[in-house]
Image 1 (tube, rainbow, N blue to C red):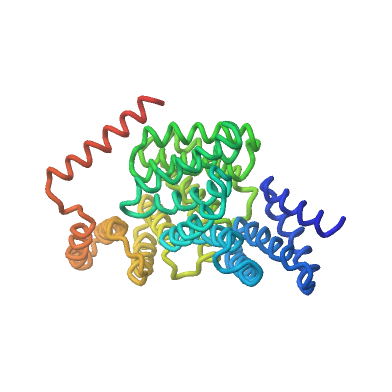
Image 2 (spheres, rainbow, N blue to C red):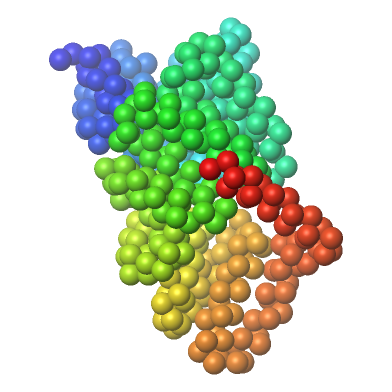
Length: 398
């Protein structure tokens, strides 16, 4: 098989969700092309596919290294403001999304979109690729809902026009629109879009493709947010089964275990929740390290499991550790800090550590106030009423 054929095969394996096979095939191509000056475009392409496969495999440092090397080659051959470089930046944006660095992901995608839109004909699929990344990253940023929805609808319109209603990329965009609405707490719309995305992906890719697992994760998160724990458990179990075919250190796989553990806690299945949270934390620490803000939710999950098991010393340990990580982060979220301090408060109280409990009250009230929990009662009632209405509509639709 020629190197061109091997490169095509590696790309096809990636598209089928066979990321470990793709990594093996593409690593061989990269080794063969590495010192061949006449094959620089092919080498850059192989590095891009390899980096994208490694992103899925949780090998984030290797992925970044390969994508940045590809970007250097593209910049030298095509120019810094070229469409080829912009596409590599989109893959780097994906990497930032998995690391939950949403602002850098959004900025990279937005600058790439400007270049790609300028250099492409109207309704070109490459414009949809860029718009999708801008929209998905923006959905995680405050005040970006309308912008995010507009970009994702642009991507959806182009993909429907060019690929038809049943293409997996259409399903992917619907899934991302679902996430956008869920983050804005529009649960009825989010659920409808998510279920439609799932149906398209299953039909186009098969029930066990990792992309199906991503949609199952997103749906289970929505069900947890609306306290539909029975439904959440069913969807999360299936998602965990699909994603179990990926390495444990895949970022979505980590979050899927975390989500399933949350539903297990709600259902009183505390032994399973403990095992899942331990595995998720171990994987998260391998991927992000022991002091990165990405592991805070894993630490809180494990602490919450111990709290429900009435193992208050262990609960205190993980809550204090997560608080330490969170306070050392540049991305301190007051709402997350408030929930964490509440849990730590209860772990102290149940151990009759009265002094520690009282000492925690000022910090808890500060976080509560900063997180806007201390706003006027009318505003709180309005928010609760809005979310309650969304939850009721979401449940009625089901």
